[in-house]
Image (tube, rainbow, N blue to C red; front, top):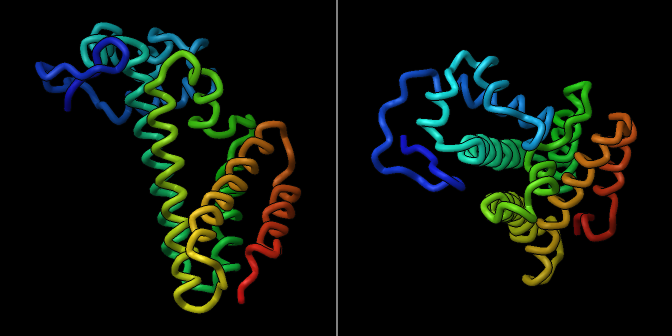
Length: 211
């Protein structure tokens, strides 16, 4: 694996890791997610992971380099979550939307510290300073949109939905937007029951009703 240099660039001369990289990234993700980028130090991550500061800098070049590795991995995981939840559901379109949003609510309320989503948190904290964060975040949202767009298109093809071709992509994006709104509401302590009620109302919106 290549290492990140300044501002997340890659060093083709990177050496083989001499530590458990997944453990390091897990510890770093937890720290960045709970405390944010600015309030997290390499020393804190080093202590939590047992990986020396020097090894971290040698592998990633900077705190930003480590963060971008964590952020990319986290965002890939979010796309995989959406793809798995939507792809594994074989019921009606309306029930697929309900299942997806219910899974998002379960995920974002699984912890008691109201941490929300690392992607959304980081875009708010770092988007104006580090364009790499915006690029990764934008790509992630676009991939989520495509997953839902494919499900909408399948609903149209099967006759479940009556939509014009130019209405398919916006509907997929709308559903993703609702899921992100639910996550943000969870950050301010809105109870899971309330989030589920909001999610259920989305499935009853006229634009989501089956034909």
